[in-house]
Image 1 (cartoon, rainbow, N blue to C red):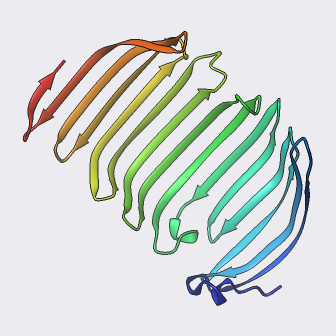
Image 2 (cartoon, rainbow, N blue to C red):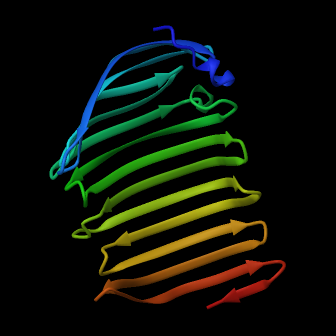
Length: 231
């Protein structure tokens, strides 16, 4: 009770009350662990925090029951299991990034599911980012929609669009990536606009006998410094 992380990390001043139980062991089949978070409450950096949930880890199953962790208005939730027949749902609702990360700002919301075999699941996720800033990283806005079958037995779809991306001193004003298909037959289209110019790329192909074979459908560069190129 009355834990103050600020004693070790000054930026994380607060007072936390937590009731939990943790147990585990290593076996020949793999690790076994049980984490029960009965209560997490208090204040951190002037924001109310909360949490609860249970996580059971076994060699073949990871069971997550009612896991919720929140700070301020922001909250992350997960419920379900990862196994041979996975049924896991998750949700992220962060209306203000500074609730979780000091000196950050912006909004991030998302949700998704994991279905099927743990080693080759089908992953579905939607994510939206608005005006996100954290140190030298920034995103004006971004939207991602993923429906990916890691067993490669059915068609997958990926869509990612955004603008105003900054990282490592580089800035991308516009970004668009779309991909769909199976491992055997798929296509990819991407367009990137940088301060040096715009690049567009389109590929179509597939993986057969551990070799990728395909065709370049389009490749173009429009740049004031390097001229215009088209293949």
